[in-house]
Image (tube, rainbow, N blue to C red; front, side, top):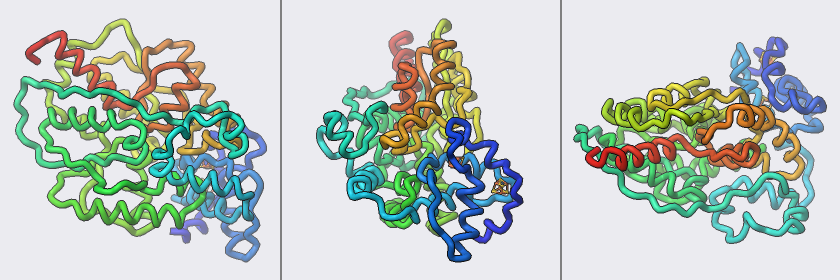
Length: 389
Ligand code: SF4
Ligand code: SF4
């Protein structure tokens, strides 16, 4: 993969698309931190550059590159060459690279300010807190033919902080005709957070145990992902950078939702509120994997009055916004979305990443949830309005 570095045309398209560069003029940008640094590294002068850690790993530079230089992944390698950091930063970064472990630490999200300062944890961005929701079974009058078994990939963030989301997605899949198998069988992380933080070897090691687990599941129509970052990791990063291919196709939840029975969409349309609006924010990893606009299309089909977000990267960047040195950049990256929310006054924001949702909700003060949450809630409303549906 790295041979593509030599293809760099120095066209600077990646530079023009970098959201961090647009809010932080000191950031050297993707061309300097990626292919230019890598060429020097190959020649043996691989000293890490200042501000390399300021990259959010949004991968929008890779999306812009006309010759497929893996710019963001080169920058992740570059981050790894930063000289040994102080112990407290190594401890913090080691924890944040393992979200499945952090989610089990009681009281982590409400640790006092002094402890946060000591650990260089952001004060402005809230840490995730486990949601406690009661999820009821959905009813459906239509008898959809069985569509087979799907594995629902419970990413570590959803499993740790938003278990209700997994239940809501399972309920929707069930009324669309699928038998749902929860995956993976053991707790872990696909490695997305570690890769974003410049720890590719750790990302590979963590991803590998999940990959083995997912490949052990047989006779599935698809593995359904909820989180856009995990989706990009499983579908693109694993085969491209780690040679780990899955035996079963990976399908994002909202893409499978597009195949839900017509009766489902027709019922949602009849119950859609007419005087409310939403904003749909496709995460940067979602844009890289699938382009923009799919959430807007889906929710307009459900009768929602929904506008696309104007923001390229909200600044959450996995654990990026949780680090004290990045919180100001993260806040600036979310400014545009905050202004859009101030002007459009939506009742909700739709996004398919848990960490983006926290960051956006904090910036805009608008309830920000996953597509499965909004569809589930809308279907519940349908059931109340039309009791036999
Ligand atoms: S990954 Fe995103 S933040 Fe990092 S250099 Fe590329 S465009 Fe900029
Ligand atoms: S977009 Fe690609 S080819 Fe152009 S400067 Fe960036 S890395 Fe090089």
